[in-house]
Image 1 (cartoon, helix red, strand yellow):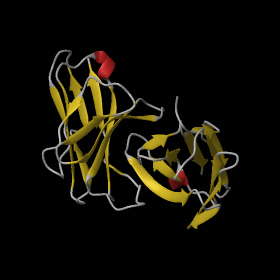
Image 2: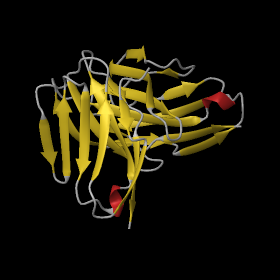
Image 3: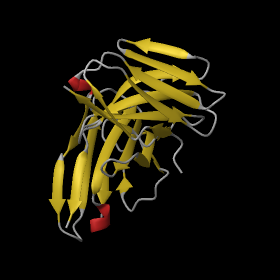
Length: 110
Length: 114
């Protein structure tokens, strides 16, 4: 079974609003990463947070990590139409292979 | 934009044909990966390589095979394509530097087997 599960599976919001998506995982991790995938394309790395970090920022992105709850959240502030994509969390443990979650499909309504 | 390329982008082929999906990267990465992804679903690792002449099977069983004769090139081959192989195939690479786990993805090959 997959390591990560995203919640919600799909999210539609108005442009300018904030979008929050969550990821839960099952085992210990070295780090957790978030990726974006535009329709029919490859994935693009957004941000990496290590197991000893609790929060990280990158532009309009804010990621939190709670290792006690084995969960992470990705917040996109002031959303834009170009943010429409699927967002995946991925965890790394030990042998450094990524294990991807099920993804959240985000739609920004202009 | 990552310097990792996949060809073809789209392939429609009949059952029983042999196909090779190409993947190449110009970043000098030692680690390369192949993932399979059905529409709207998660990615499943099917093959990976940590360097030349090193290949391993991933978490999802696949009838495909891979080779790594050159650092920059990691082709995937299906000897006899079947409709069940219809999917998107994503290639990725990452640096061998310690604590650098970010993967860079190619644009993918969407394979349809009739």
